[in-house]
Length: 289
Image (cartoon, rainbow, N blue to C red):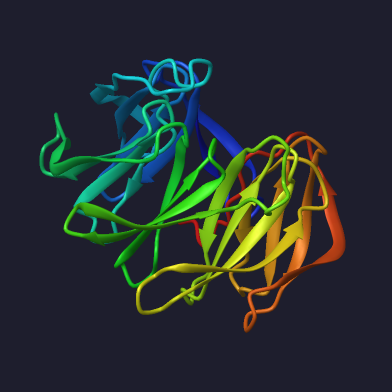
């Protein structure tokens, strides 16, 4: 479903709806310049490319990619489970992690091809350790490094990135050495200055893990762990000033505010929160025209 946002009142107006062609849609990447939306169907393991009308509403599906395969977890990886779609920094490629097959699929992007904007790249995918379940991808501001959070394995993989190709160089666990509970890695975010990476872990940990990023090679080193002050920290954002980190704790029905030290990267509870039913995704709107 698509809505129009009123920049003054922040009210939403329903525009229209369109089938994604699959089940369990979980992520959408919007490209207003090319008038395309990429919808990831987690349940059925597919990626739908939908064109947009002039007013921003949904038009029709121009391309549909159905993934195939499975991995070693017979309960959660019995088939493909597409979890997202993300542009490369140069805008020439699209990366799509598949939790069910333990792969990050890589597509070449051609905005001039209105019927098939995505085609397999020279490196069609990056395979990750079986059973880890890749969830999301983010890039360092210098465009040289990619970071993949792996939901089932509770790990972050660091890759060199160049011209649509990923090369794995480091994988770090998000778990404390003595942790023995359920794992559910979720969100991942890099500070605008490229110095720190934040990742959230649901399951029984319910915490945010903070890493320093080596500016030369992109590798991670652990700084601290911070309880999310709730249960199931699924999504979080840093505000435009960089001074606050805001977490959506899904199971405790609240959005919690942390103060962020821009020099050390550390966060601390402010005691402020907003009660809201099951927050699963947060986003700042910088400007609306």
